[in-house]
Amino acid sequence: MKLAILSRDKSLYSTHALYQAGVDKGHEVHVIDYVRCHMEITSMRPAIFLGSQKLDGFDAIIPRIGASYTFFGCAVVRQFEMMGVYSVNESVAISRARDKLRSLQLLARKGIGLPVTGFAHDPRATDALIDQVGGAPLVIKLIEGTQGVGVVLAETRQAAESVIEAFRGLNANILAQEYIKEAKGADIRCLVVGGKVVAAMKRQSKEGEFRSNLHRGGSASVVKITPEERSTAVRAAGILGLNVAGVDLLRSNHGPLVMEVNSSPGLEGIQTTTGKDIAGMIVDFIEKQVSRKKSTRTKGKG
Ligand code: ADP
Image (tube, rainbow, N blue to C red; front, side):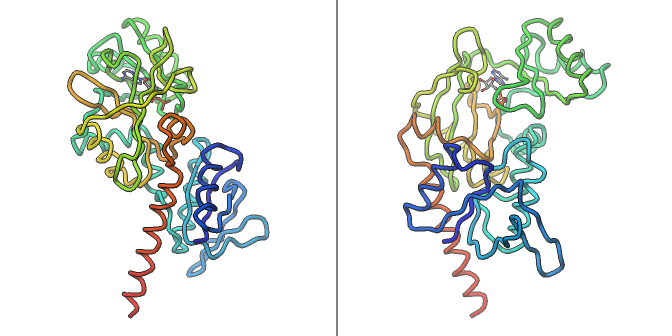
């Protein structure tokens, strides 16, 4: 296969792991800085370029779109899709997953367990919003935040009101969420590839912190997940339309609750913790999809 990894930086752990997995399995692999691409949107002849070079002949792409480039990155992925190139995660699924509110709405509709979550615009709704999620303590999140930045635990109602007011003053969109105290600062990251959980780890926050993100000093360990956690993670990835996803779960008194579904899950933490070759599994999955697509096409023509 001729494979492109859409990533800003070749030296990033996940990008490098995917590159190496592709090369080891005998594929031609290119790492493309998608932010530097430009697209020609012409009827019947969609094309994509990096400088003067036309990006042609790819069988599949692996998008690793950074949070700050979601809009442009998704347009690049879509352009490849228009050209008939297989993308392991489709552009529409990546956009869905990037919008926390949209994802939660879609998951809720299908009955996936979620922490009770509220969203409001009008400052007059603040009181009702806090009540809706069960009062203090509660979690307030910036809709556009990543890696735990903009996720605040408000211990009292007053603190919650001040934080909501401060974020509003900055014109930021926020969610209010029930605080899952019994999770004790831990969450479970499930790595889903092709409708299966292929690895899982538990992330525990450091002392005095409720956010378990590894970037916030959390530590990771191998965890055995329950069948319910497994099926919740698989269903959540499926509802958003992601073939590759990192599904974050909180262990609550009433079963697993989905906190977030990530469309470009980092591979470093999960591979080093579990010792599993997730990059290799992603490439194997793509191989299967691409060969299936080709045979279907031939069948159609024949
Ligand atoms: P980000 O996408 O920025 O990582 P998350 O929504 O995943 O933000 O939250 C960061 C961390 O905060 C989570 O990994 C979890 O440990 C903790 N956390 C988030 N929401 C809740 C909640 N409702 N109850 C308890 N802990 C939470």
